[in-house]
Amino acid sequence: MSRGLRLTGTTQQVLGALVAHPTRHHHGTQIRADTGLSVGRIYPVLALLQALQWLDSDWEPPSEHVQGWSRRRYYRLNPQGLAQIRGALASAGAARSMVPGRLRPAGEIP
Image 1 (cartoon, rainbow, N blue to C red):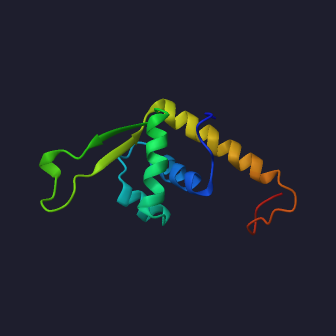
Image 2: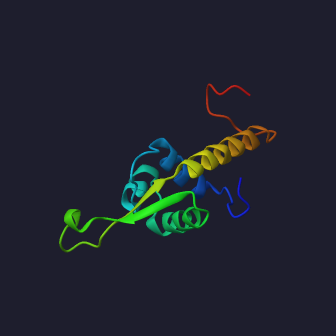
């Protein structure tokens, strides 16, 4: 895992949304729908992931732009980012399972 990434609950939710559809071009509104997080919590995570060079981004092409709305910025995982994120989420899951006395969802094996 990279030194610049803290795996907060918000970060894990954004990472989970990105990894669920690794080839999709994601935008903030779509991630908000997938996670239930506010855009004010999503964009700092996206900016950090981009600074870590785990995400590539592009602006919505002018031909797809809807008049009267702001252009969307699309984010896409790059191969390095996908590998790093999967590793980070696996580490977070392993660390959570080692916490003594943690409540587990029904059916989860201790």
